Image 1 (cartoon, rainbow, N blue to C red):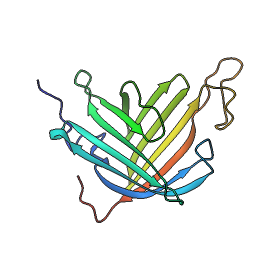
Image 2 (image 1 turned 60 degrees about the vertical axis):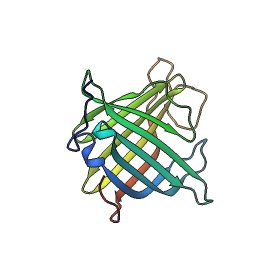
Image 3 (image 1 turned 90 degrees about the horizontal axis):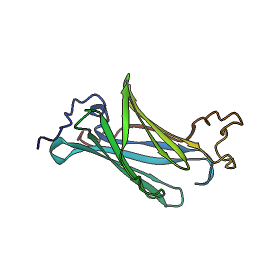
Image 4 (image 1 turned 120 degrees about the horizontal axis):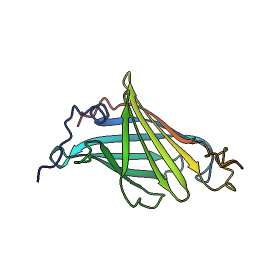
Amino acid sequence: MDRPRIDPGHPALASLLGRWRGTTRLEPGPWGAERTVDAEMTFTLVAGGSAVVQSYRHTEPDGGHFEGHGIFTIDPDRQDVLWYYVNSMSPAPAAPARCTWHDGVLQVERHTGAGSTRHTLSVSGGLLIDVAELRKEDPTDTHLGDRATADGAVASYKPFMTSRYRRDPGAQQM
């Protein structure tokens, strides 16, 4: 079987490859008070070029940490990017999410009964920006602002994590 390959020149993933270091700003919420933490993200081409593994880690001031790992691959039927992501705080998703790629921005939305998460990744001028946003479906949850309105309008997304990175000058691009 011919598996789709991720050419290191694939526009949605090529600019991400490598090791990045920077900071993550976490908004106040059930995960704690507002804070900025040291963070790193790596994207590595694996499995003979058929996938990219993503690793994220940030370290809290008390020495604790949060980590997440994703895998990007190409849907063999539609030739677009799929993403499966697990982390140290949330349950694993049932299936990978489909990514969109437009004007240099990779975006993915994951939906559950409790709400939706949207991740937006972009690289410009040597800076990688990763914005994670939540949209809760629970109108009694007051942590994230806007909710579904009485007329049924959908609640808006609210950022909960914004990371800014520069390439680690000591790491080789992968």
